[in-house]
Image 1 (tube, one colour):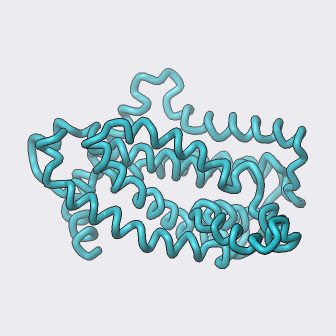
Image 2 (cartoon, rainbow, N blue to C red):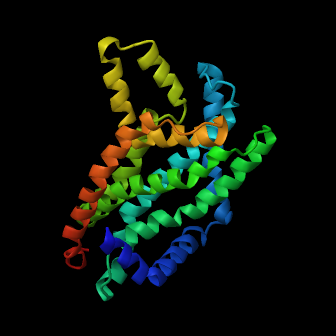
Image 3 (tube, rainbow, N blue to C red):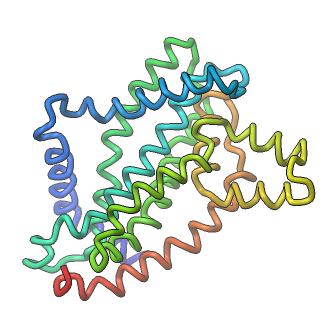
Length: 272
């Protein structure tokens, strides 16, 4: 960990250049430019709201569009960060062949760059909160920690995925599809409270209910999304019990993912 931090400090100027390149290339030839960063969550919010009118998802006392947008923000940030991170090494093949520097800079920069779009979505969330008459609360101080945790989750996938993608390019294509499927096992369309009610209170799966809930919260995004909604909209602290399984999983996977990346790093220039 100390080595990683040292590398980030030493090569911070390179990271800034790469981050700027990522942003400019992404929107350089797009007529609407950075507007595309907000189209996706807004369109998904409208679609989920329409679906909800048919299936009747209970959002409590929070307007469903606001709840859905607050769920989509960390989810899209994670999804796109992980996807960009996996493709980051291959997309910088020319640079890798020319000079040496710690290759983990590519996935880290790809993930951190997505903070720009997340910041834009925060502006939209603020507008929605004003529209629905929601005021900021003290628990919003948790937001930076939740975002940091989301970055670590994305890096857990980005490191190992970027290394695999150098050897098997299908990884970069398959990951967005797999993450889209993961969305349906995360509390994006529906709140985590709905899962709690079914499994912990109603014991809908019988003796397997508690185990299934633990497995569900093993998905780090379950705790992240619920925590983000709680601190921003519910005026409540994060449900740490729902976050602990995911935190334990990430604490195991992130070092393993980074170790695999560093082991494969020395062969990138030859293979890529």
